[in-house]
Length: 244
Image (cartoon, rainbow, N blue to C red; front, top):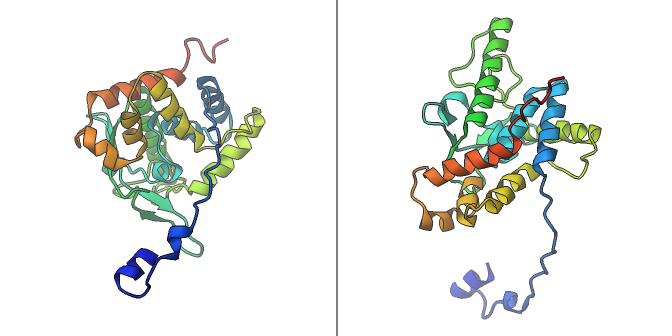
């Protein structure tokens, strides 16, 4: 701002040049382990809202932000034939206003590969939305939200409500140190540990699109599909789990 004022001749010099930026705190990121993510999914499945288990799994395998997850629509954003999802919007919940959609945080649309497990979970969630509409004897809107509590699929989940329910659930299993957005860290951290590049992981999570664009084209690469499958394998149901 001050630099522009100098260019326009409003000021002789910029006082900002003498300012020192505040130091960046060295905060160690919290990264859930695969065992902790599975524990959260299993607890959600036992609770009153098993659909939360699906949301946790999708967030962990894709790295979607809460608002991006809530904004997923059936037709616009999911391509089961090619195993892709399109991340193009976020849900915003402003005071005294209805829920609305805005562009993603970096205002870019990204296409992600999804593995077989994530695709199956999304299909199950969509089937539940369709079943609820039939039971309620209402018609779904043309392009319903995937994570919705409304009978016609017209109203998405609120991002804050996702965090609130997640917060209550994590306490029941002694994982108070985890927040919903740490599921993004799970994908990012383990993706790198399994040998995928920082750029590839950043592109999947929606970080630094200008950097990612220097290394990857607009299409979904096979590397991204391999990354999706590798991360999902960490939290896939174990053989015999839930059986006596």
